Length: 134
Image (cartoon, rainbow, N blue to C red; front, side, top):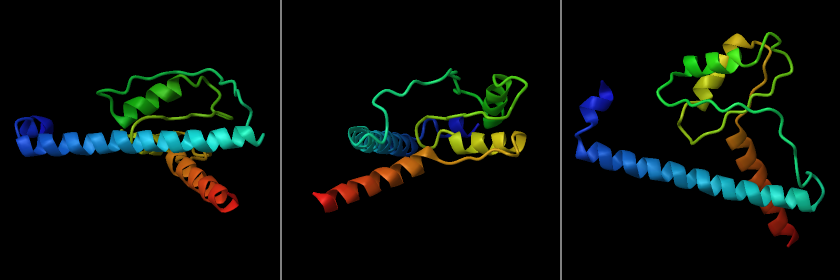
């Protein structure tokens, strides 16, 4: 309903386009910084150049609630829910954190973290260390 109320509001449309562009820009900047940090780690032998990924499942989240996405993720996990690695990717503000909160209710022993925050912090620290060392 809210979307329909604002659909014809030119100011809201301009603001949402501007904010959306800023989110995409920030995510692209984060991706570039992360690549620099990974490249440095590979060069120093901290990370392997090629890291094989396990099985992956892509879920189309458009039009779904966090509850629906969490349920779909969990249905793909099978009966055993121990030792799982679930990685959520997507643009900022798209519901990853909300979905994680839903997963935490179903997986009470789970440990979670925000890759964005972790990677941004690590990349920043690596860059600062490299600047100091020249």
